[in-house]
Image (cartoon, rainbow, N blue to C red; front, top):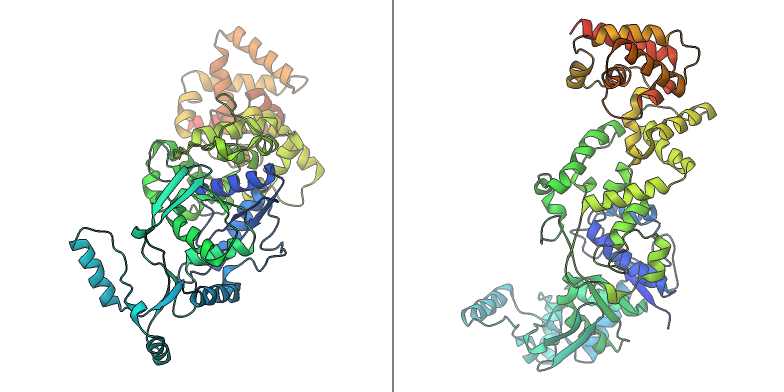
Length: 519
């Protein structure tokens, strides 16, 4: 048997981190088992679907490198892969259920259903729909249909059964079918509802393992009954626990963006987006927030870091292994090691994974990753000349392990333009400090005449100057950094001076001294 898994997003918004984690588990299982991963678009809900949202969903998969064997843009033997284009399949399946007496037209009015619910509530018992339409004769049903009387098609749930299922993650689960109402499976306009459409699709696509979010566990008994009624081969089910918000047991939700801005774990990510996105010509929207995959692509994370974090959300190889490549996760993934409890999303751990994989990235790939951010921030222009690429390489090398995200490169804008932000508070503290301007001017004169402008010569010159004047090297280093870069952090001060060059370094020191004099 060839394992076939699927992920079936509804195009109602950008790719949620929790949804992508579920998709990733289904993808990993298929790849581990040398099977097929199918991407199907559940777009039957016309009121909620947004065609423009499909592009970002597919892009999230592409960016992470999660390819699909069948689906949109790829095709396959079991298409089409959009529910909106599979109407004939649903119609045929509905007719089969009607003919076998396992589905019926329900003509109950909204008022009748409301009264039935009220009576159930009053009796403090679960609402089970009254099957009054089953008492109609064939002639009466034909008459009602001919009259255009409103109806829905319901599945006839067999009563008095104990339905059992062995879920690969949740374990053994049972339901009493006497407590299940007859679900609507087709609207009067012919539109199929979720539980019905997904059963027809999973069977036609020959899905062997339905790996999905645990919120669908409540849908499972109806789907199992529908599979049985249609004579389908029953797939194996595995329900993945939800992803919880940082420091909470509540499900991570796109609807709580305002609340998450106050969450200490998320605060840094929001602040970084507020700072970086405008420089890149992007808007920090709810769709592009830390609960969606797009945020991490746009802010400059590596797919390897995000996948490492997603793979460790509720799954582990052992108690010690944290860092895992995609190949290692494929080799070792099993559903048996997926925990039943919700997994807490931890931005700090994600950042640590990102930091690790960024360190591992070859220099040339770092350059390729940083260039789009420099272009978007208008710090460089395309096409990139060889000498420009070489300079970017030198900046990245000087930046070293401080480069955690590709977007961090735009923090070095002082290397690429003469006008750059200045940390005014630190400038006052480091450059305007009593005695520092005079020392800075004297040291600048020495910089103007030293034979070579290299790391070694600059360090030697500063050490000698500090000793001669009886001052700490730190005071002069801080003043030099603020004068030439406007910031108290970044690459080493000697690296900064070398990259800027003698002439530009002296110009900036002079400008800083004038600024200090006017302060």
